[in-house]
Image (cartoon, rainbow, N blue to C red; front, top):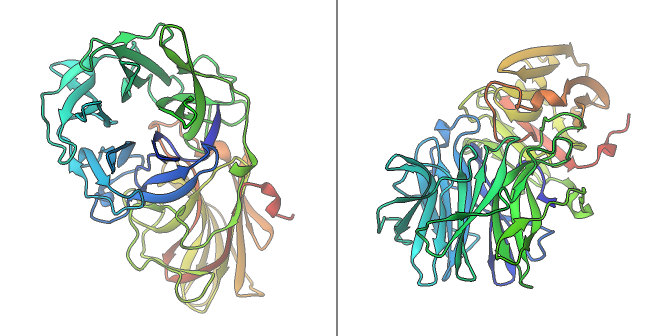
Length: 488
């Protein structure tokens, strides 16, 4: 097993169309939503589009941290792509469709059943079935209902088909038909350190479903020293050579502690079938990070990998005035706003050792802007440059932990140049912030891990830039998975 999408990329789902694999992951309150990655070799992945890219598809302004869009499933049937997802903030379970993976995607069509993690299955006779975790007639577990794939309307009454294998929160249901059996794949145990994958099968789509004798077929819940944790929420598929694989989520904790800051990531592992027609997900835990997963790239401002906290205002970002520059307009919203849309753009931190670097131009107008290691509105670090109306420029270090904002340091800058080079250098121990090569502050990496807080969250750290007041210009933006960019 090894990660194929590093950093914040949880709840993977995959389908194959001709010679290309398409994979979608969760994004919660971040926009654009539900990224679609494409690959022809299962190792090299390109972010090609997003399912959610229009302001009117979902009400992002109502989404708090780690709310919003949960656990999409992608399927392809007779020329149409289907993505089902749960908007836990407002719309509930819904379905979006497109005949082109690049879009346009439809508005969300409601699926009138409770629960999360909706998933579609098309049977041999083209009948379409929806599974989700729901309470049906007082029975908690996995529900099944036949639907009209064009409208999402129900063609039958929901029935309960499986209560899981005894773990809490049976969810993430995926149905497959393989060798005349209907296989039902679940996630159980919660998405934290008790997470696991369980398997069931039946001769009939409506059950009864028999539990695999090997359940759970994947879990690291009893392997606290393993470099990968929280394994679960799987989707299985067959490649062009008829080899079966699973994609699933897992985390890479910091050394020596069950704390993770990168978020839940997408992993890949082969299946192993036994003589009785059951499969397990192979569990080989050697770290196998390919060099193609390590990235050093200048970030163009049209790069699809940029994420925003909810939907930014229409004129918050502009890159048309001058090549290589990004103009960011502050709207008064701060990174601490619990449901605001600050003028923020970030990229997923993909490795523990990483660097994010940008040049901020200081002109003669008042502004407030900087760089941030951002987990959510209650957990982030920031290096802030502030120029007031009198022309005084200050550099401020801020830590927001448990929702409390601390000003760690502040000093007046005497500028020899209008260009300020700002930098974040990350490792397993600290986030360190630099201005013109001088270290200004540091914050513990573990403080941006939320396992020990009152509310477990589901995202990962983004490294990015922001503006609060005024209009600022950033240039020479570079993200690297190598720590060597900084020369002390």
